[in-house]
Image (cartoon, rainbow over all chains, first blue to last red; front, side, top):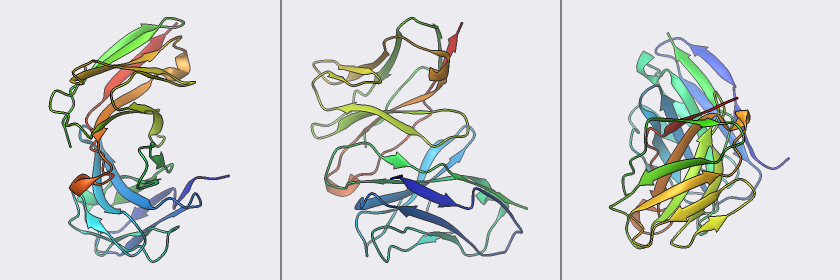
Length: 113
Length: 113
C-alpha cells in the first residue's frame, strides 16, 4: 500500500540519549517534511527536503538534524534528547512541483524523561 | 506564507452541511488554499485545495471569494466521523517557501447526532 511509514509508533527516551525517527515513503515524492505537534501550538515544521541530497531548516530546527540520502527515506535525529522535545512527530511528503496535498504518516509519539 | 484565521470551534448536526470559514487576507497571487483535517491521534489528511476557482471532490467543496481573501470548506452531509480539527493553510510550491505549509490552530468541528 502506497504511503508513508513512520517508526517507531511511540518511544520513551531518557534525556541525553540519541534517537532517530524513521520515515519511509514509496510514492517517489520529491519533497519530504518533519513536523512536531504540541497541544496549543499546532503543527510546526522542523526540517524539510525538496529533493534527495538537499535539506532545509523549518520553524523549529534546533536540537534536530535530518539527512536525505535517497528519495524514499528522511530520518530525523535527536542528538541529545531533552524533555522539551516530548511531542508527536509527523513525517509528510509530496511531489515538489505539483500543488497536490501532502501525505502524512501516522506519527511517532516521543516522550523524553 | 500567508497567515490564516479560523474560528476555534464549530458545531454541526449530522446530515447537515458543515461550512467552515477561513480568512487569508494577505494571500499572494501564487499561493494556493489547502484544507486538511486531523482526526484524533492520526496524521493530518488532505481534503482539497484551490487557487481561485471553486473546487469539488468526493470529500468536500471549496469556495474561494473573488478577491481570494477568504474561503469556505463545505462538507455537504456531515457525519459523526467528520468530527476533527480542520486546518486552512495557504502556501506555494515556488520560491523560498517552496512546498512548505504553515499549519495554524485550526477549527475543531464537532458533528453531533
